[in-house]
Image 1 (cartoon, rainbow, N blue to C red):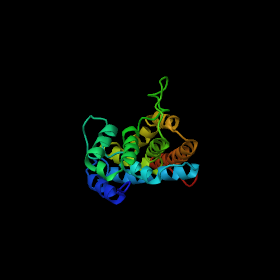
Image 2 (image 1 turned 60 degrees about the vertical axis):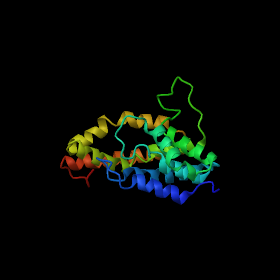
Image 3 (image 1 turned 135 degrees about the vertical axis):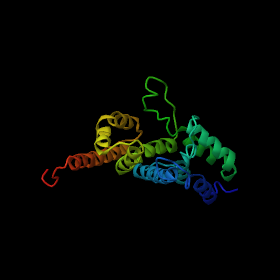
Image 4 (image 1 turned 90 degrees about the vertical axis):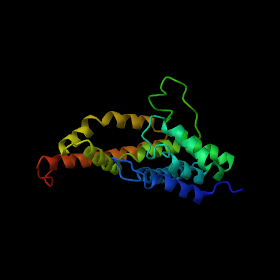
Length: 217
């Protein structure tokens, strides 16, 4: 038996996520987010020289939000996604690979350094889980965060000034929590770089929205 039928797994994931309505986000958002998260996790692992199963890491990153794709219910999407994988495509994995991939999916938001675990005994996850946790945060930041802000701002009826104020007044506590929740130093450096990019963008946007000349500042 093959350890994993990677092409069949990816084809299943594509069928589950690529055309799904994710309003107010673009159709297939979970698929594109999964692809980016997988690649980020791989780059993090390689940058740090971590010995991980790259194929397992890629599939865990790709599938981490499968339980959220098109789903509007209240069931936690991590365990839900892990159960969907076991039920529908568990036979495409060897038991040991299935265990790691479903652990990634089930626990991708159970970050040991997050505020939810402070003062408690935090879980001890393998590096594949920790890498996808960090990559998931990073993919929501920087230029991607601006893209998401445009989607949500339009859906919620914000004008430009309101969208800018949301960035300055509402988002900072979340950014601070994300920084504190990351597992690796390289992830923190990347997040700080992306936040810096977004900050400069919003400074420029605020000047333009105010009708100012920006080449003079």
